[in-house]
Image (cartoon, rainbow, N blue to C red; front, side, top):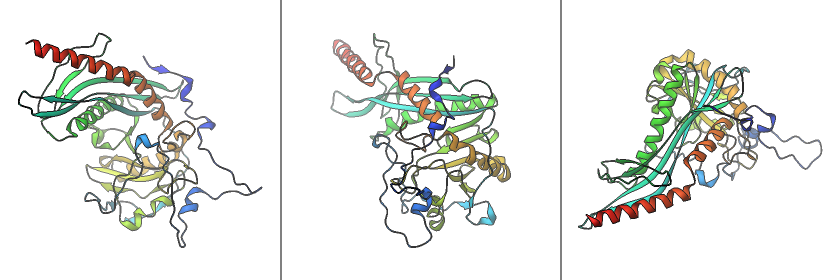
Length: 361
C-alpha cells in the first residue's frame, strides 16, 4: 500500500533555501552566480560543501583524471550557451526513483590453511515517490533486501536470526577488497532499475536519481536521470569553467555522452553565499534515442520545474541539490532497513552460531 503523509510538503514555500540577509538596511545581495563567477578578475574562493560530510563531497572532479572526456555539444551549432527556458509546471504523472544501501558488518572467512577472504553483511532498498494530478504525493513500489556477500567466489550461508533478520547468500569472483561493496551497490541499482521499468510501463515520467546507464529500457521510455555529484570533467575546459555561472532554473547546452545519452547541467537552487560554485548544480540525462529535439524539450521543461522540488538546508544536509521527494524517500527506506546497531548484533550472533556449528562437524 502506498505510504501517504503530509510530511512530504513538496511544493510548500518553506522548502525554499535559506538566505542570509545583509546587515545594511535596504541592501539586496546579488544572485549566487554573480558572487563567484563575474567576468572580470576572479579571486580564490573558499566554499563550504552543502553535503554533510557523511555523504562525501558533491564535487570531486579531477581535470587530469584519465576518464575525463570532452563531450560533443549537440545544440546551438556546437557552441556552448546558457539557456533560460520558459516557465513550465511539473508533469501530471511524475515520480522520483531512488535507493539506499548500508554495509552493516565487515566479514572475513579464514580457511584451515590460513587463507583469508573478505566480505560483508549489507542491506539495500529502493522505491518511488509518486506525484499524480489528484491527491497527495505517496511512497510506493518499495523493495528491501539483505545479503551476506563474500569475494573470491565463496558463499557462506548464515541461518536466519530469531529476531527476524535473514540474509541472501551471495558471492563475487573478484578478490579485490571492494568487490563485495561494489556488488552491494549493483544490487541497489538493479532494484532501482526494476522499479523504474514498472513505472515506465504504467505511464509515469520517471526522475531517476543517478545516471541512466543503470536503466535497461531507457531507450523506449520517458525518463530523466538526475546526477548530483560530479566525479569528472565532461566538457572542454572553457565550457566546464562556465557551468557555475548558471542561475536557478537555467541550463547549459545539450551535449552527447556515451551509452546513448544526452545531458546538460542545471542549477536547482541557491546553496548560500558560503558554498562553492558547483553547489546546487545537477546534471540531467535523457535517452539519445528520443532524438535531440525531444531531448531539448524535455530538459527545457525539467530545468524549470525541478527547482520547485529543491530541498532546504534546515531540512536536508545535501540541500538544495538533493530533491525533497528523494530525501523523504531515503528517510523512509532507512527506517525500513531497521536499526543498524541491531543489524550488527544479529550478524555477530549468527556468525558465532555458524562457527559453533562448523566446529561440531
